[in-house]
Image 1 (cartoon, rainbow, N blue to C red):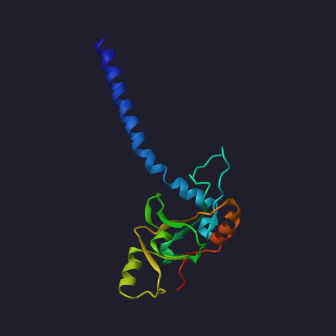
Image 2: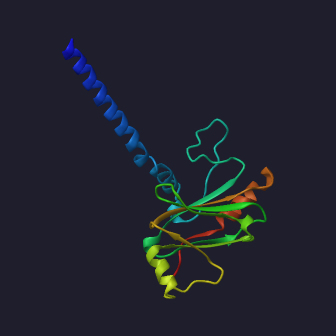
Image 3: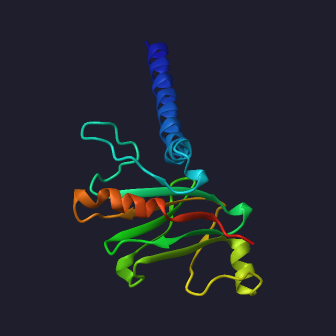
Length: 182
């Protein structure tokens, strides 16, 4: 009887250890799912328009069907990054994520930025060079510092109605996204 209780207690302890280990490991494995999906869509080559899933379809990136999205990935090890271009006079937002899916920076045009998006993304070493004035940048560039080299940028637009969606997606496709020249 005692032997059976010891085996039962040992099984419960081992089960609890395995359960806790799985719970703690899953978040470390899952964050790259969004990064990998963006890479599959070609986001490393420039801005890519994200397709909005139809009602009832799988929505792994959790996209709002009322918004138009463009995303790109930038490797800051190759130099400072930039996302720039004109956007329609409507609500828009830009979010910079690291590879793990953590927000590094976020802003909207409600902050008085206007209809021109002009964001420069720098790693910590490049920001130091900027402070020492060893990097030339355009005036008016919004400077974002990333603690990591691998970043993805998502720009969202809110079309006022479904008829304007195609025009808004063309505006997103016209954005430049990549490493700064020089």
